[in-house]
Length: 391
Image (cartoon, rainbow, N blue to C red; front, side):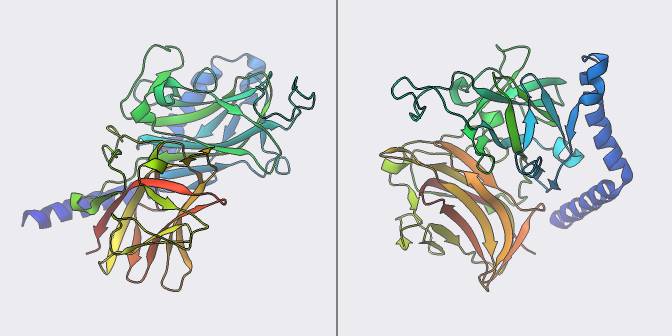
């Protein structure tokens, strides 16, 4: 009886939420939150700069992802952000209500020759760029009403304010980077470098500042929010391939322990050049073929909410260059839904793939695929699936 009551409450709440997000008031409220941040920023600018603020609206809005695609701006060169300038990104209301998990960016600076004393031609990749471009990604925190920046593991970043170095590259090859685990690693107020917050971070707005010595070009930004948590906790299933790793909390990631030494810890290896792989901990309905981990589900239908992976592309020779796709393949071998595309595999960390909606239905004969590509392999320490049996 209690379960029926709980199910009815859940249905009613979902119905109310659908009505709300279909209402004009939903969009007005979201824009109001964002506009208040923009008005605050404008109040700090001189009168001639108030009308020159660059504000980017989403290109695609998913349940737990928002994509801002700038790759086609200026004939594929991306958006130019001169030194000292800022670009603002509008966050939809649904994503203002979900904690930030990961920010993915693609950026670069103009390809150039870096002076090199050894040969005078700038061909040594180890020579540090004397005039680097730096991109600082910042989020306006709904709770504390201030701008905060990403904090890398152990506080490491390429520059101040959690900045990432914009590599000299040609326009059709910007560098894709992941700013991982905002809550796990903590985030820092831009005006208080000695404070580290690890509470859930709810974003009212995002901005990117060019804070280096050279203009940068911005091509892409993706906001990844913490997805819906399955009601039935038995549907959160973890498969470990390495004993040294742990996912931590499903929603916050707190307690995460990753490893950059998976290559020597008997992790599961996804190698595009290997026709078939295996592992002693591989469940019977999982297969490894040609760089793909193919997962079938025993139930006739499930609702899949998320796919998490603890990964590393470190190998004996050093850092690799693997990229990852996660998708659903139907019984005819065709793409049903893309959950992740061309994600940069970290040297050490956890990433999560989510569907376009709150969940995707995976039926009998359909397969969840985790694929390593770009002619490099990926070491997987563990996989965690969040799903429910469809009733």
